[in-house]
Length: 406
Ligand code: SF4
Image 1 (cartoon, rainbow, N blue to C red):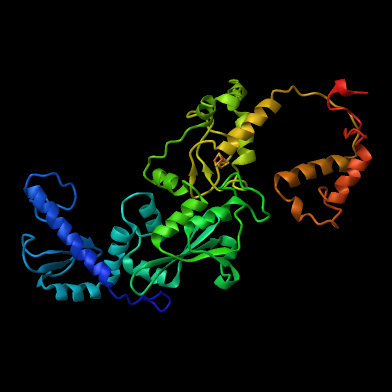
Image 2 (cartoon, helix red, strand yellow):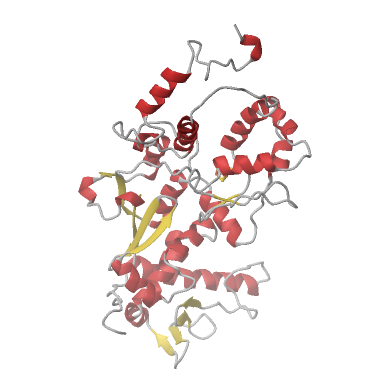
């Protein structure tokens, strides 16, 4: 190890981790006995019906002999096994190897069953790629991961327990006492409902999560619960994708199954190409609007022409926000274009384009009142309205519908 490499912290073996090892050995004996008795026991038994050892990084532990002996056996991957260990001697041996034992304990017993939660918590510290020593050293310094707009910092206590600080990425480095601190993951339902300006957030994966809060000290299960509350189902879909089991439902299939007031969307797909769906994806699913990575396409054989984004978690089908917007566009896009004739100066045309850009990019609030060089400046917009709208609000005095002409 060089001076620059972080040191592996001292870990004391907690009593509950040691008890869990003894319990696991007992469970394995029970499973092995059941196998011998002809019962089905799919876990923790060898073909011969002797208990499977518990495997830690670098060594394994089992009962001595056929599993019914009095002592314990600790077998390093490289080297001579220690046999006939008393419970006290086993404890001492495991205490010397506390990082590996606590690592096993955290994921096997505290985090529990295989699935999205375990995969996610292991991903945070790259448990499937890094050694225990490397991870504990990194955890001692604070291991950071981004999930959408969340910043998750994982640490390890001197008993090998994992603790997580979760906050908005914009609050990285802000002292805890300058943020609103929470403990119960379910309280985050309030945080995610409104954006910074108090506006309702219909899309939970929009990059509009409010900042100013922190969960400074969560255990593994609560950390997972919090992420699920802030970004529902994102871990489950990320996990499915990693397992090669993400079931994607493309645009056509999703729209074909709409019914009731949304059934009309089916009429938007007229077999004349998918340009309209490109526009939908560009409008709604771009990284600037949604943190999910769009995996759905027009149909299984036809990819959209716009990028799906770089989000860490995938989007498996058009969401309700997109479906609802598509219903509006289906109606609007059924209109035929018309030619309108009115005069604008070149600057006025450019200004209208500036206004559309500023609204589409959500930049209106950034444009200063005094900055009249900006086309979307409020005074500039008011000037244009005063000059070019008639009393009925028609641009250039031209009615939108010719039938409305005076
Ligand atoms: S459909 Fe688009 S906007 Fe909706 S969740 Fe998926 S990527 Fe985001």
